Image (cartoon, rainbow, N blue to C red; front, side, top):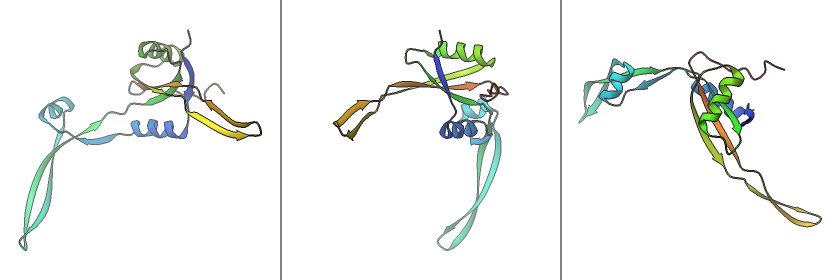
Length: 145
């Protein structure tokens, strides 16, 4: 059963994919994060003015780089669950899916004034899935054109 309606290849989704595809340097907040991400120690030095005197101080922070993971968006049927979406993406594109996040959108109401009077209607509700792939995997939507 086909749960994927169409891939999202919009400017907004491309920005999400580009953001997640770049390496980021993050600061580890607590001791668990330092151990988990194998964070490295960095010393920052700065000066503080207090009562007309300058004091030099040092602060130690722990930073790590976030691994690159590609994210792609799909519009899916509202009754599809994450496991079904994951299975279908893996079968269609021959990639390994790490995680699937889903968002439900309500149908927006719209009205317009015509010769017949005020016409009210509603756009369809839909569900969007954002799929995170294993490091190194990519999907090329334009390969079959």
